Length: 200
Image (tube, rainbow, N blue to C red; front, side, top):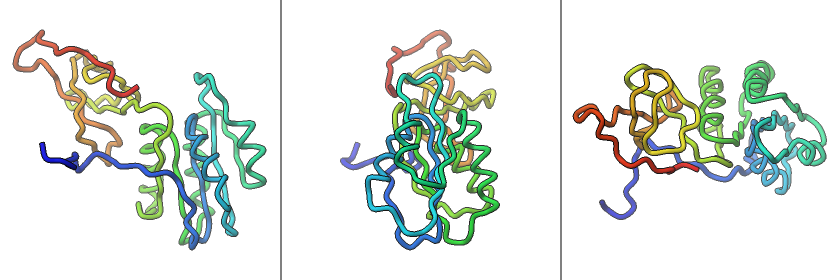
């Protein structure tokens, strides 16, 4: 394999930074995405209006709610959960103007769920910054039964929809917001490779 080779479809993420020439700023974050929000607000904040939509993950041991509440003076909405944040994104789009910059922070499943809402509303991807925070778990789409599992940690796992053993590929579909999962023992039933945690 050549040095520097990468799967072209695999998304790349960068730390969030303010876009100076935006007309408005909307920060969308969930769970460990709170880290991205904290880093963003350590920078000099822009003069334009800022809106922050955030929810902790009830399953997580660490909460960012209180510190974000102290850091963000106005324009903050603390939601109950991931679904609440995504609903708030849809509602917020009605008030957005041309030139609004969006910032998304969280795990890959959350990033692409929020991105798809923005895309369906006509937001250009160049106006959306994405930072992956916390777990590296992958959302995986079973090509056999079309089930999407939002948090897969291993190279091979059992599809919750059809029970097949799937190999998690690096190929990523932006339309589905997921990596492709293919039956690993299609040619040799029962021949399952060693299962490893690849995405902690």
